[in-house]
Image (tube, rainbow, N blue to C red; front, side):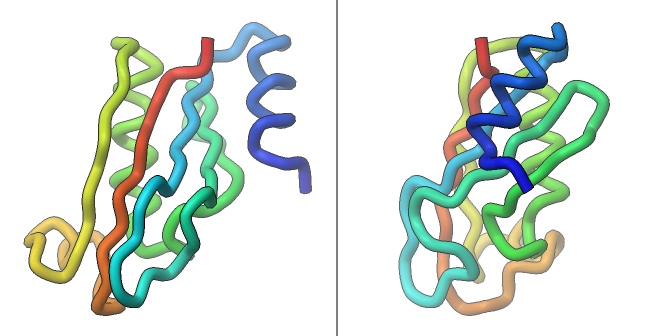
Length: 103
């Protein structure tokens, strides 16, 4: 398996739209540590993990939006957040994920 940044570069070199999601903060019990990354291609292909599968679907949606529209977005998931329960983050912690289009 390639590292997310290497794969992002490969996909960009192929002319693909790419976004990178990075865990920038955690509180309490979190599924992945700060610095964990998920790279997403414009067709929905992805590699890596920011939550061990708990919130990847929501992060991929946000990443595809960033690929289309540019800019950045910060996502925060935790047990007090209704969306966290919807997407499956029930580990008791919180995570903050920075999502950006790779230029």
